[in-house]
Length: 247
Figure 1 (cartoon, helix red, strand yellow):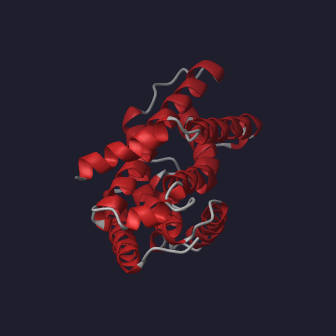
Figure 2: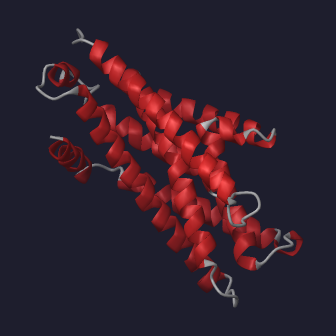
């Protein structure tokens, strides 16, 4: 049943415009990061690839990636919140856990695909725009990709929870922006592991662009898992109690 639900979610996205932010926001993040790198290149005292990543991840990890997940999460619930589709959903012979998990798995898959796309953009800018001669740090880049994605799963679960009970498309995205600022503040205070958005900053290596220590990798996995499970349970609990609505 879960496979069929995932297929249904993918079918809904096939003719949507969700591809626009999935392509546009990573490109925008890389372009802004590349411009910032070019303007401050002399002041960045680290190898070229790492220096470029700090600037790319600065904008992408802080804002563009979590907001992208918020947009996709809101879109995944948009049809259900329109007209009488919510009533149809609540009376359908499908467990609410399957409904939510199918949306979460699709959102997580989108997040991973976007990470791969960003990695290729990052490599292309360094190789063909700035003509870096040093070897591409494959190991570190893959680690940033994976750790950032693992941390982003908790952000995805949180945003999907918000879009479950908030019918507005824009409000959860606005909340996401607030969460980005709050997460940045927590990271600046050295307690970045306490909140999904700040955990994402830690995962993508946005500040130092070095290999993430094993201890931090384990912490990212554990904290992300805790938040993900929490928001899954909250969402399923809400859906079980939510009845049909009069529109």
